[in-house]
Image (tube, rainbow, N blue to C red; front, top):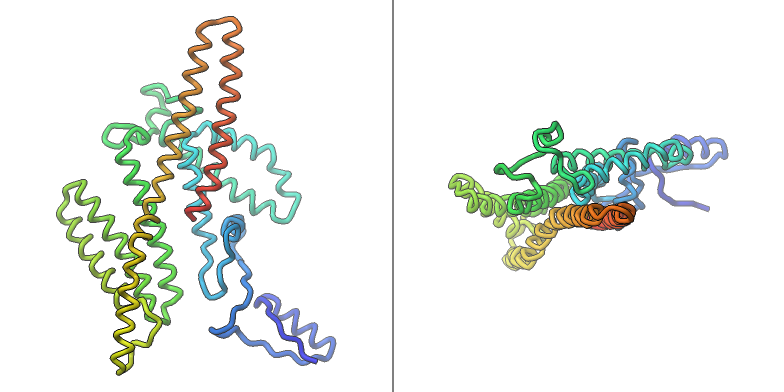
Amino acid sequence: FALQGWMPNAAADDVRDLAQRNELAVTMEPPGEDEDPPTLLHNPERVAGAEGCVTFYITPGYHTWDPTAIVFFSFSLFFAMIISDAGYGMFMAVVLAIAWRKFGEYEAGPRIRNLLVGIVSATIIYGVMVGSYFGLEPVAGSPLDWLRVRIGGTPMLDNQNAMMVIAVAIGVAHLSLANLMSAFHTRRNLRWLGHLGWAMLMIGAFLIGSAMMAKIELLHTIGVGLASAGGISILLFSSDRPLLTFSPKTHALRLVDGVMQATNLSKAFGDVLSYLRLFALGLASAKLAITFNDLAGSIYEKGGIGILLALVILLVGHGINFLLCLMGGVVHGLRLN
């Protein structure tokens, strides 16, 4: 009888030893382009915790690329922007410190712990940048106030136009990186120019929009050039049909395939704008925390039992807001990735 199957490269020596001990013949060969072997993700221990985030939706195909390392950093950033509070980040750090040894008791624990360290660190750093500590702003002139990032003299979260531009810029960078990685992994096929074209088109369109807002003519010129070159690449290299052929029909069908890519323009536009949720959810969590603080403060001023009620409002209110932030950070952070 004969047995055929798949194995990772790391198991090759073990299979050879098994065959030698049992006097079996064994043949090993790499998978062909037309075959669909199962995918075994293998990443450095420091970022391997994000493998669960990747496979939560779908396991990457064998012939595509593994985005785990990118997802490790982008998910941490997205989560931090949705939380937008250093106080919540510090609370998460305390919980993580308490459960630190517990994570080391099972095999996947250290990987998940590394991911949580990245998430907590990003949340605290971003919270300090926006200057929010359980909905409270740092005292003016204090060291924490100096660490706040201001855009045009206004704290980040209060400058809505700037934050929307930042969120869109993150979306363009994230999606362009995905297309560049796809271009790299299809570099043996001319379709890589099509993937490159989408990255150029999105970056060019963003530069055109930024130039219109900032009134920078050079930025506009660069953006038009990039977007035009990207559009031409998409038109000419988005087909699997052979390019080196004398058949007019094949070339015509290649152009039709390229023209059909225009239907994806609205999808690309919507995908980029979906990153606005990073700012919107962060602003919502910050405003909700401020609302609970103001409500508790007004009751606290009445004294007596009002002090107890204020404490209850703070605990329950921030508890609800924190849980909503966690849910939003996980759901929307993963969805964007």
